[in-house]
Length: 348
Image (cartoon, rainbow, N blue to C red; front, side, top):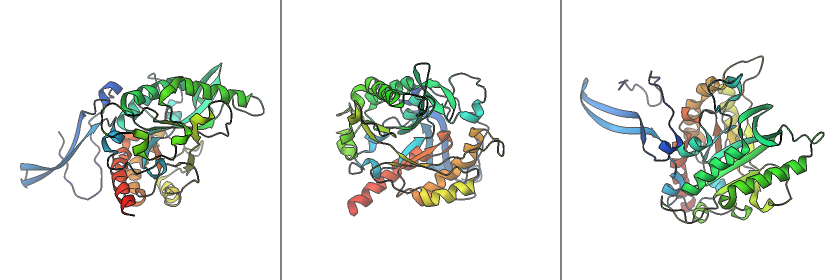
């Protein structure tokens, strides 16, 4: 244990304690992972301590069902939804050329969902007959099929609402060179085939959380159609009834915290008619003007992002996407914010 004096109402402490990655199976238990923060009050210097507050790092695999009795009246666009940016850009091996500059996460899709992330930002490309995750022009090590299988397994186990934001279609979707409509038909067919019965039809898009879930609590899900496929393309072919409107992403393209916050002040609560909206709360490096590892950029803003959403935007923001999300507390903030939002909505 490390003791640090509390000298201000807001702050953080950097320790030498390393976080050892936990399996998705361990996270799904919801148990504490052995990392605690405890606020103590001492009656005398170094003696007679009493616990004022405590919290632990743990998974939150069923936070929507566990808490939906507090906000059954909220719709998807009323919710504060914790998300990740470029969700499947993570490494599946120890070394990867240029990985520090293209990877935005260090947890698998299963781990992200088990920790409490509920919206996934996906960019898709097509290479050698397979749909892959991309970050701009860089192909990840993760296939779309792998992402979908992880999502389906999680949804079948928990019955939680999950938003899949198929936001951009990159390599292999060039209208000048590629059979784009056929590629979209193939991709949608793959999505529907793998997700199967957990897919929420478009008609569920305007339903309340209570209606979507069917029941609250951690028991067996009353309904299993809880995965929304938000598809950012004007697709009107087979299985279009399984696709919901694409998410409107508001992206600062900022290289420092000040410019990011200035952008969020104007856009964190911005709404998109007929669609969900996502505040992209991360920095973007510019080559060659700025060369920095994406993890380092995330460390520069994640703590402050938590605070600024807690202080300014918690009442009105919709989806909030971040890089290396374990560096912030957006998940915990979203849970508490949704409870208060539901109370305010009922009062109004």
